[in-house]
Length: 323
Ligand SMILES: Nc1ncnc2c1ncn2[C@@H]1O[C@H](COP(=O)(O)OP(=O)(O)OP(=O)(O)O)[C@@H](O)[C@H]1O
Ligand SMILES: [Mg+2]
Image (tube, rainbow, N blue to C red; front, side, top):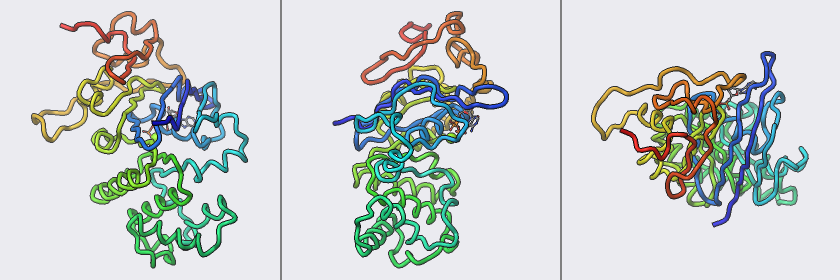
């Protein structure tokens, strides 16, 4: 196993008129080649900001406060814009929520899929590039003959398949998918998720998979990272985190999802709202909503520590025997 992606102490702010938004603060994680890491957490906790920072696609008001992003051992933060462009699509590609709406309406889908190929591989023979487009289409479940169709001739699910074909076009090592199925209906969601899962296995891709839906993460990923208010609060294998969640936030998040196999009961929401990230709370950022909060939680920030094999969590109360 080799580490493909190593994010170290990433901190990103957004400049706004009301002050700096501390969107990501001290996030670290690693991803092995060929593995899938899910990132979960409530809206606004910094998932997309973390993801966009890897291929350096953050909006212009974003500032890197500190941190390193090592990809194949090289720090992407040191790269110039020109150097990072060579990495995007070629080594790291993305499938975003609503990506299908980004297709150019006046170009055939074949002409759009070929673009990153000829850009990144200028020496490729036109015939070979065309051939690859046809293979990619078949691979994502679209008949090759449809290469000459325009985006409006496809349904939303089919257009998202086209985006996946584009993401795979240059045979990247890492795919970042941020809510890739959120805008689609449930049947199509399942098909696209299965497609992503199959492709990931067949092509031995590493993947970061961001979703609000814990059940989707449990099914599709090897590991899960839970974020809360810009911080990573827990990380570990799917099996460990779902069977023995250590952080009260992870526990609450899991409780807030229906379990069709378990006892039928009302879902427990998490009371309150995530904090304002211009003035994040002192101590543990979750303390104001936590039912296990004690004095220290408001005063000092808990550090991530090992709570089980390959599982870490940041909570002052871990290790206590509870009544
Ligand atoms: N361009 C921006 N300018 C100012 N603040 C921003 C900007 N983009 C994001 N934010 C803020 O940064 C924080 C993290 O946002 P982010 O989009 O990363 O969250 P998320 O976890 O992806 O949420 P969601 O689940 O809703 O997609 C939020 O407080 C958000 O309001
Ligand atoms: Mg997001």
